[in-house]
Image (cartoon, rainbow, N blue to C red):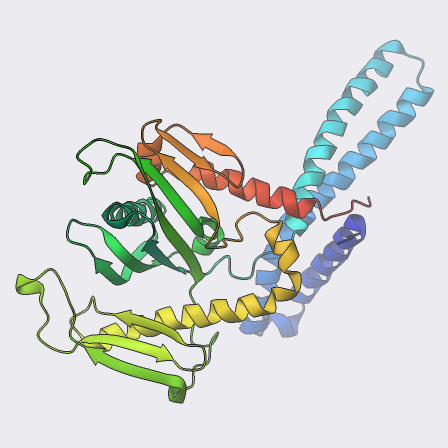
Length: 362
């Protein structure tokens, strides 16, 4: 994708100035909705325009220093100009990169909440326990950011694992960070169920879906097959004696979701519908992006669920993300939600891939 960076920045600055002029007009000031709309756009453009104006200032000073170097006879002034030019060249390079990143197209889903599905893969009971570890990891990661985690559906095993668990993470920018977690996660450790002490390899799959509002996805009630059944559980007081569990099948796509964690059939249905909306939204999103699938594969975090993305190695206290070949030796901290360093590397790699597509013309 060829982009005239300078031309794009000039266009943004002109728009910024026009918005400021519009915001000063009496008819706009007397219209709270229009004023709010313009103020929001003004706030979005301000960081880019501010950086661009600094960038133009640096270019102007660099030109002055070059003229001084060409014409100045005073050795002291000549040396000062050369030193300043070197410093300005470093600043120009850094600021240009920042501007290019600001111009990268934003994922429209970045600010959305997410629905996360974790499923035990190869490894039997150990895989189910690993799925529970991942659920706790993401819960702790969300907690540290003040995000809210809501359990939507789960299928527990006898010793604390999950065959499947689905939950929502609600907080500003949740999808922008968690979208990199989609894929196959692998654990290498001695299972608690293994008497001989051998290291086993187990897997769990993670799918991160942007949460869809009703306005995002229109579902025809006639396309739904809704069934109720008696929830299963650990037994004792937790056994639900009524048909409160809900299974919903979207007939046109064949997508099936179920929820049984709530004792209320109504609440289970609401949660199941939120999962279904997210799945249908993701399905439509994938269709729309099929034309640029090759581009998406070249970027970090596309999250193919068949792709092994990360290994958690207990004997070596190691976590390795295979997409960026990045390793940290603090496994316990990572499983306690300390994902910042890994996600930062994924974000930087994603930006680097996108920047390769920009042809600088400044």
